[in-house]
Structure formats: structure tokens, C-alpha cells
Image (spheres, rainbow, N blue to C red):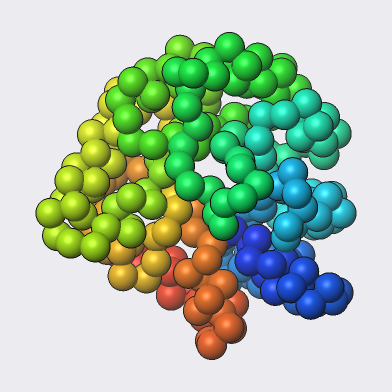
Amino acid sequence: MAELAVNVDHVATLREARGAKYPDPVGAAMAAETAGADAIVVHLREDRRHVQERDVRILRQVVKTRLILEMAATSEMLGIALDIKPDTVTLVPEKREELTTEGGLDLITHQASIREAVATLKNAGIDVCIFIDPDLDQIKVAHKIDADAIEIHTGAFCDAENGFDRDREFSRIVDAAKIGTKLKLRVNAGHGIDYHSISAFKGLDEISEYSIGHSIVSQAVITGFDVAVRDMLRLIKAL
């Protein structure tokens, strides 16, 4: 059965919007775990627009499930990861001007530097996942550079405005999940998945984990974290 990794970045976004000390992403992570989340995800961005290094350090101390750190493959972030030692690092692309991560890492262009980052993290005993678009060539490079897992960027599917585009993009996700599995990579999925789009993944057993943040945090504003996480878990269990 696929697992749920809850991203609490946008709890920190609310905090930073007011320059306040609350809401606390650590508290949200604890609530998510209590509700049954299988892992907690945070993205420590170069510009520190939401999650701060202090948040990650506290989370490392208190998370009882698994702590997944999303980050760019920079020397600064590698140093932080080696010090904090999350259970998994997911390497992602990052641009200062973007609202959210806009696409997967281009492993074909940056193969050498990402290979070096993967080796550095794995030598420290940290599991490495790479966030990539559902592109078969990119997946083959992820396997070549010895990543443990891939996270398929599902944004194009979730944001598609018509049935034709949705079908086309979902077909790419299916193909990516199957080839990733054949290459012995663990296959995760994330970006833009909500309480409606998750149902499309029914029967796609190659996906081992869904990384979901914005939709859960948004729902939690209305229902609270416990209900929001339990509702998503129920939908995932029904896949």
C-alpha cells in the first residue's frame, strides 16, 4: 500500500507572511504524524522563504516516522544535510523567482554535479530521491547515477485544463512509474495532488509514496490537521 508523506512548508509560509512565531510547522508535523502520516517533508530553500534551518533541526529531533528534506544540490545545502542527517534527501531544482517548484531536475544537463551530490549523501548513509519530470530519459539517468528513488513531478497532470491534456500527462506518469520500477528505483509522486486528483492513481501500484502538502494544509485551515490528514490517508488506502 502506498504511503503518505505530508509536506508542512505552507504552515511556515503562513508564519513568515506575518513575521510571527506561529503557526509552527513542527507542531503541524506532530499533528500529521498523530493522524497517521508515514513521513514529514520540508523544503529548505536557498531564500528561506518559509521553512528555516531551525525548523529542520527541531524536526530531526522530534519526527518519529521519517524526515524527508527537499533541497537544491548546492554546497550549502549538502553541508546542512550532512549535519542534520534526514532520513531522505529529495534533490529538487530551485529558482528564486518561482512561486513553487516548477518542474523536475534536468539530470541530462546536470548529470555530473548531481551524481556527485548523490554519492556524497549516500556515503553519509542518507537515502537519496530525485524529483524529476515523467521523462524516460531522465529516469534512466537517475538509475545511472545510483539514486535510491525518484519522485515523479505530477504538476502537469494536476494542472491540466482539459481531458485530453490530463490523459496525456497521466499516461506519461504511468510509463515513468513502470520504467522506474523496472530499473529497481523506488517510485514516489508529488506536486499538485489534491483530494480529487488522487483518485486518478487508483491501480497504479508502482507508486510507493505520495508527497502532498498544499492541499492538506489548505484543508487543515478548515477542518484541522487531524481530519485533513486522515481524509487523505483514507483516499490513498482506497487506491
